[in-house]
Image 1 (cartoon, rainbow, N blue to C red):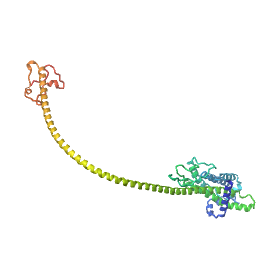
Image 2: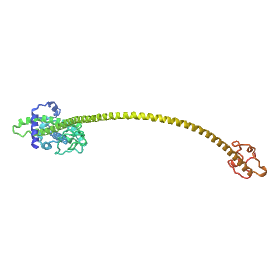
Image 3: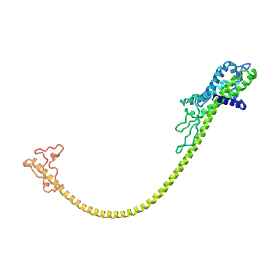
Image 4: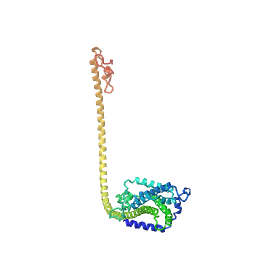
Length: 390
């Protein structure tokens, strides 16, 4: 595995060395201001140390990105150690082409975005043993709805595809941050090339003058691989979704075909049942017509019978009402007579008088106030206290 990584790094360096890049204009953005340079192309001791800090900052940014995908973290750690131990004169040589004050803002923006995203994924592993998934969307088993399987499942902070079929994309700002880190590493490497070449000429062949180039090349390679893998995984995820969508459409098309066959069968069965029902309905309709005629005749006869019964009942009701009215009148007269008798019993012997209307009344016209003092608000039936005489 180690030899494979080193071989890949060597090939990448050779290819990069043979490519022409329009980075001179971009590199000038990271170059130093002429006013900062002292006599003899030297810089104050503090700016080189600032450059060391920013180179370490670049290494940290690449390492934070490497948490998303597998990367050669061992080489990155070696590069970090080399930067920490790099002599001041080599830093000063790099300082001639790289301004740390201009390097810092870009890395700060990128690391802020990466840190914010990492804080939302607490389960994301930073272990160097993270392995990239090599799964791909395979045809679904018969009767199984296809799901999208992530090739780079580490984006979700796991080492397997999500069981519910969902996928996880890196946010756009994280991808742009990865591009910014890679572009920064690429610019630093490009600018360092001139310094390394100049040192080779000065020191002569065989001189140990390529330490700075080796360090920035290592950071550049890891940053390039990480950025490439991020874009690869995003593109692969897009392709996976497209392939899965196609498989889903094929699955749905097959389901629709099976459904159409079922619908055709149901249509045929419904047609047969409809024919049978039509014949049965015709017979039922004839029977209902016969029953309806019979019921109509029964209703007419019942209506005539009910009419006769109601007429007889009306006559009986009139007779009952007359009888009730007569009984009521007799009851009223009986009550008036009883009241008159009570009054006579409560009236002194020489003062007893019968109300004349008692003798001629028939019921509702009989007197009702013969016991006036007994029925008043403070009524008390006592001797000689029953009410006025007639």
